[in-house]
Amino acid sequence: MYTHGTLVTAMHGHLAFWGAYGMIVLAFISYSMPNLTGRKFYDSTKGLLAFWLSNIGMVGMTVAFGVAGVAQVYLERKVGIEFGLVQQEIQVHFVILAFCATLFTTGIGFYIYEFIKYGKPNDEALETISN
Ligand code: HEM
Ligand code: HEM
Image: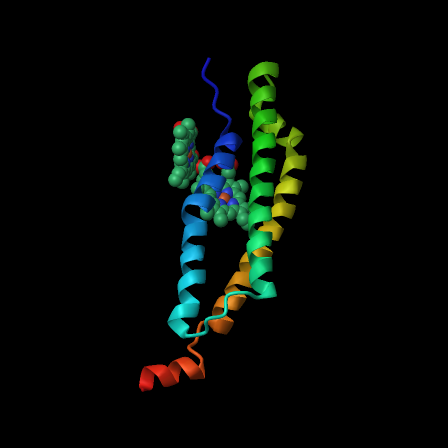
């Protein structure tokens, strides 16, 4: 029998997009920006926080989506409960999703903060360019 749990797809979609496209873009920026600006400084507490919070948040989100998706498919297809009622039953997973999404957003916030703070070339780099 064909089953399609939309939240299982959302789990797959988020982890796949984050891993394949989101992370690679952020990684390119993190590697190339210190070189482009002449900063040559890769480690910072906020940078580490950006990495860990966004990744732990996204993994947590996908686990929440996944567990919600399995419960959703089971209740709809096996037990035969109607879609809207099933959504009410799986609300708790969305509380966890929102919590993990907050971690994720905080991590991205740190990334953007670092990007803006260190995005401009420093004096040393400007001297090298002008010479
Ligand atoms: C605060 C962070 C985020 C939250 C709370 C969030 C939440 C959601 C929700 C609730 C859906 C609808 C799921 C459904 O009912 O099928 C969705 C869809 C989607 N999101 Fe996110 N999202 C977040 C971040 C992201 C990020 C960073 C990416 C990509 C890198 C992304 C990619 C997608 C995609 C591709 C879909 C469509 C998935 C599908 O069709 O199944 N989201 N998101
Ligand atoms: C770069 C890697 C990938 C990305 C960004 C990606 C993203 C997505 C997204 C956003 C969806 C939701 C589409 C929708 O709601 O209409 C989806 C669905 C799906 N993906 Fe992927 N995916 C990737 C790789 C893969 C791979 C390697 C497989 C299997 C070997 C796969 C199997 C599926 C399946 C079975 C669905 C469900 C299709 C459906 O609902 O009609 N994906 N993917």
